[in-house]
Length: 245
Image (cartoon, rainbow, N blue to C red; front, side, top):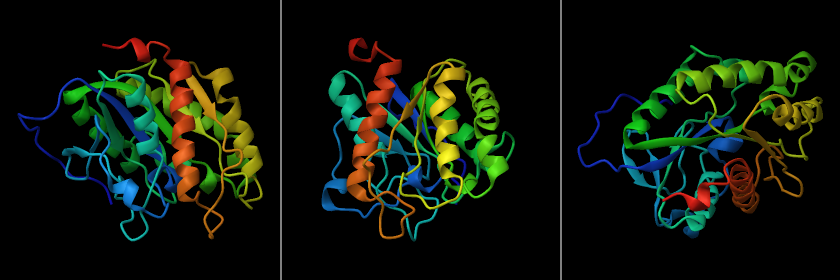
């Protein structure tokens, strides 16, 4: 379920620090929602399905309403907002569960949706980073697993260019260590190697994080911790964040 077109409101927020959230279900979020996940965080907004800026509460994504839940976005943004009281963070949810890297290739609907939502959001601020978590769908095919980094590198280069942000920081996360897919370890090796060949990228470990009963998706506490790790990884790429005024 992708977002539709929208008009830009005259009273829309300005000077947001924007982050695009893309990938598959563990980025979209499948954690059980608790009362704390519905409480707004000061200076943290999200672009909803209707292309409106609203307080960032879970669920943020809208790809599969029947299963959507807690993701990494709120804990990621909370830490960044705490690091700089002058900044308002704007999250752009655009992940879609069950999707392969091939389905994110430039020109296809998921890619186009992410670009369109980001370009709309840019009317309210500056793109500060891209968060990526995907690979589970590529973990059942050895050829796709071994070629993951090469294919992802081409994808992110084009995405950065299309967003007019060739050097924007990109943070990628490790797949769950608990996965039973035959080639998930190979995908994780490929993800971990990305910072060695793609500039302004960082890799986030999922060590010690736990799954839900489905042994596919991270549970709620793990997603909150994962978001915090994503934030720390981003700060390692942008040391000026605390000095932004």
